[in-house]
Amino acid sequence: MSFSAVTKNELARVSGQRPCCRLAELAALIKMDGTIQISGSRQISLSIINENAAVARKIFSLIKTLFGLQTEVLVQRKTQLKKNNVYWVRILPQPGMGEILRRLGMLDAAGRLSSIAVRDELVRRECCRRAYLRGVFLGGGSVNSPEGNYHLEIITGNESFARYIEKMMQKMHLPARVSRRKNWFVVYLKESEQISDFLNIVGAHSALLNFENARIYKDMRNQVNRLVNCETANLNKTVNAAVRHLENIELIRDTVGLEQIPESLREIAVLRIKYPDASLKELGDLIQPRLGKSGVNHRLRKIEEIADQIRSKQG
Picture 1 (cartoon, helix red, strand yellow):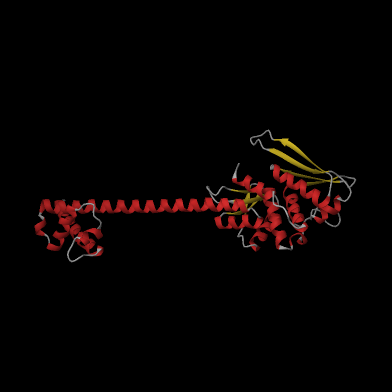
Picture 2 (cartoon, rainbow, N blue to C red; picture 1 turned 180 degrees about the vertical axis):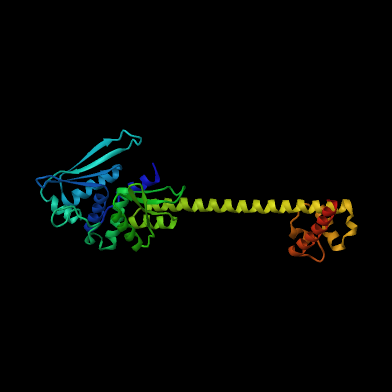
């Protein structure tokens, strides 16, 4: 099971909320996944479609708990590439449906489909805003496994609603952004700390722990890899420099002779031949009095200048 599915299963089990929070969460789920049908005789029905069984059970439970409406759940198996079941939570026409949908912000006072993204009364309290975000994530969200690229998104076909969710998240210190993907609008977070904060806000505490554990392991592994790469690069640099030093010294020795160069340069040349794998610091420690890395490097550069002069004369 994917990390996203595990997270949704956990959120679907969140309970013990105030009635106002349950109402906010249900309103978000209907906004994301619901379809309202109004017949010519003003008969109103509602269908909510979701691919997660736990989420469908939660929708059913919220409707029953809050309103006691007659509700049915239908299961349809997809025959396309994805083989997931599709769950239809259906509320058939019955007394009081119009008033309930007005409370949920789906219909306006005249009984028409509401043009307002979210009723302010539904998300006035912070606890209700948390519940509302939980609902939109359950209805159309996903989160990548922390072992891969960090990414959390909520997808909707309504741009104004996407902008509303973006602003709601930003007010809760979640710097969300909106992008367009074909005919869909995607509200997303891409930083690990932001995703951790979101999981905490909506109540996915077990998923948060798993996310943080995986993130810490991933960060440590990346840090070790960077250190190894850095050490390897430094080692290669040291080896390449030592090879170049030896080539310069051997050229001088085989042409003019080491006895023809100054004593200070001859001393470091002899040590480099004797200790070809030594670092500049180690070479400096072998000289009395001790010579620093910059001093050793300066002498080796002088040797290289002499070798380059010999090469230029040789053509």
